[in-house]
Image 1 (cartoon, rainbow, N blue to C red):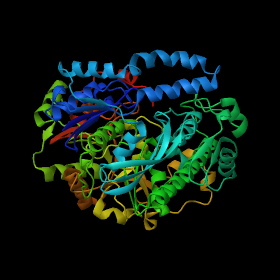
Image 2: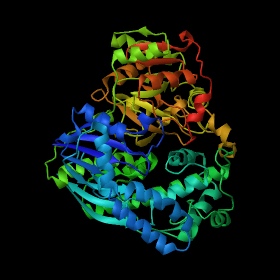
Image 3: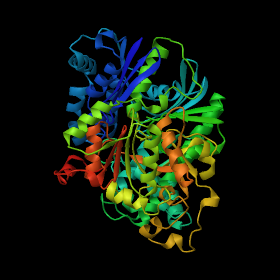
Image 4: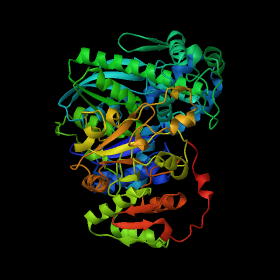
Length: 618
């Protein structure tokens, strides 16, 4: 049985093909169109999935969309009615889009499918609810036969968070929190107010939080104002948001800015303007409030399901700091988080929900999980890489011995060089996991600054993640839990830390940023945490071999890993994308397959900085 799952028309559209419950292929549309967070129908991603599965449109048993558009339309109409006459301009702006794209979605999907392969789709067209798709994406690929499932995001149709119980091939939704009361919306409101882009910059807010001073009265005061004015947190983790302070129900912004300015004492930060300590303190305050809420939700999930395992999905599940707090709370023995927890992951969840729940097919539980390391996207042959190199008159060396390739790459890293690493299948989800990655030496005190300012062209405060071979993880981090998808943080081991100066919290942001905090400074965040990726020989043997080669050379079984792109650009997919990104930045070396491209040997790049106009700052 072959099923195509689709998410689209909000942000991060994607497609997934499953066959008899096995995930065959998955990709986000943005990687093909080079338009970050592309929300359009994922025709390129769907076409890739079908080709990967040697499947035509006419052979599909079902196509599944990740939510119910009519139920979402009902929420939109009822919300505008409840807030009328406020929001009329927003209503007028959104209605044509709904009428064109979403209200007649069945016809649109059939039309798009016919354009992919010039065939008629003959199977079932199904529409599970948004949070069921999230829940299915979390539970069905997990290594658990039975688990509690917690989904938390901005909003689906009506739901903003659910607690479910999964067992075998069934999911039962037990609790649901409804719009407009939403943890995701609350966090996005602060994202907006602190000058970052909603549905894109939430991870920046998380990264900014450690710059807040935990001993400052500012943080405590902002936290108390949030709890006393914006939100009422119930014992079970459900929340009530005071709509006096928000504008997302019927307006064009997330917050009622005058109300927030009166409450917090500072205006909304303009995007790209200077970050001040008050912004950092506000980020820390909302991060702490969010952690408190999701821990209460997790404790409630444990209580009402009686399960020792927890599965997480939804956009808020990408908050790896909160995930770590849930893990350490002791509410559950084990947790598993869907690597594509955002809306794109709904394409996977809806396909699996159709297979197991609608078609009532049995589920096979694997000891690790069924995500195949999340390496589910396109890969490119040696010939295709050679063709791309010829297109740019690129100069390269071929190293067919895998062991020597890893040794040479490790040597580049140990010399302080920044390496683009392009291998195998592209990752599914927002994290680069060692196949479309930019790599560096974590011991290098200048590496974090170099990567941010000269490679990624992004804000200097942004932290970087370590990739560590699993068998060595405990040597560097206080952890007992695998984190293959970079969705948990872990503290750097105390014996590796360097003490902070007494006046540390009085330093400005730049001085804090470049203070040497450990013997692996490039991946040690201000609070001594790291967003950890554990690398396992079973799921990515080549990447594991590379890090092992670096360990053999330096004694360190850990490297810096960040996504292969610049700010505003989707992660690279093709060899052409990779070479362009390599030449546009101050990256030193590019390794594509068994080909080694050194920057100093390449012909001059003739295209200047015009490419920057192609990418909207995220």
